[in-house]
Image 1 (tube, rainbow, N blue to C red):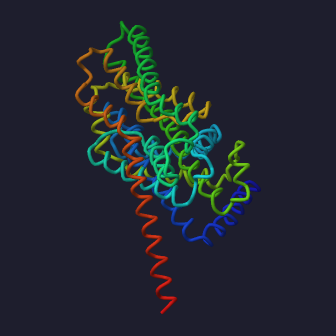
Image 2 (cartoon, helix red, strand yellow; image 1 turned 135 degrees about the vertical axis):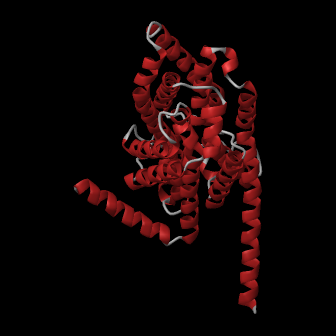
Image 3 (cartoon, rainbow, N blue to C red; image 1 turned 90 degrees about the vertical axis):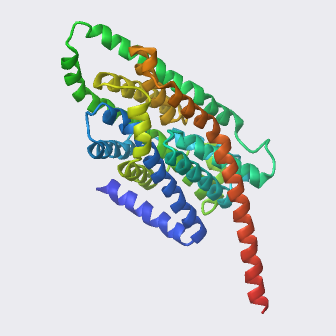
Length: 369
């Protein structure tokens, strides 16, 4: 009970501060909107395999995934949030930069959702944040924490490869273990197993992706209303108020509950033909990869990881089981995500600056007259 009272009192104290700064409140709401869209866009990651194998119908599947997205609030700390929040040098982190970065990420997520492409909301957020910061600084060098950024970009290749290899290993072991069992019986067993693997992946998804929004919210608060503590934020690991953790996981869970059926069809029905045992292998492989990278504080893409795992388990059946034309479109979308969201964010930053300038001109005119 004492813990609940402490969380509620921290929430009340901080919300009062945020409400006193309307622009900060607007950006805070935009960050939660991105978190919701992240869940909506990436719902396919959590439920595509379990829907594609027909273990669950779409509505129960998204409810199952949404619950585990929220439950991730109680797992594995805030290492990823700290990495994301400190991706840009503090002197270039302003409220305008954060708002423009969120706009870049949201616009790219909605475009790729419309075309049914399973891209990374994480990389869209990082691309948007970086693009807006560069527009603000009016230069490319010295803006980003390049060691963190390069590590994140490397995992565009590493995370799907890890998912692919783990999925391949798991399904080979499984096929060898059950080589004499009847396929119908194996499928029946794995319809139950896949509920557990889907829960594990959804837990990894919530743990990984909600932390990225937490990092952006932390960057916002430390750049504005907690500015006197910004140096401490830059230098050390920050323990976030737990209400921020809960709110971000709730937003991504609700987004997952809303679902993104266009991408579910690409991931679960078009990319490769799955059965319960192969779906369980893909989800387990991706979950292991997500838990490992979260422990290291590396913000990877859940989309890339599960896509690699699906391709891995699909290819072991026969190479032609994977729809390589669909896979090519997905990979191109991955490559374009960071630069495209960065460009949109840079344009959004310019628009925000122009609007603010016009507001000042109009206000001064009214004061003068």
